[in-house]
Amino acid sequence: MEPLLPELPSGQKGRPWRGDREVLDGILWVLRTGAPSRDLPKKYPPYQTGHRRFQKGSRDGSLEKVLIMITEKLEKDRKLNMSECSIDAKFVASKRDTCVRKDEVWQRSKTGSDY
Image (cartoon, rainbow, N blue to C red):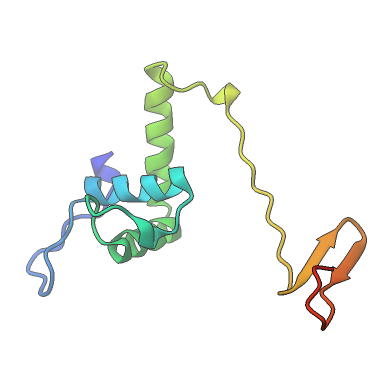
């Protein structure tokens, strides 16, 4: 996994660089729990660090490669069976105070009722 992660900056000013492993653990915690990154427990690096590295890794493809490597290792060790996994990626955006169901749309009335 190490070759896929960015090199530690040398001679950088500012805050000390947080290790890739602890940042990755924080990113995986957020992905696993679905919690907002700002709710990251104190044992992980600051959520801003994780978010910044998550964005960078997503853009350059390194995060995907690391996740594939982890998945392959878990499958090889028989700790994960991908044939039994599913992903729910349903996302429905709606305007505030609007409920959409199939082809019908209800809007809250000005009186404040639910529909």
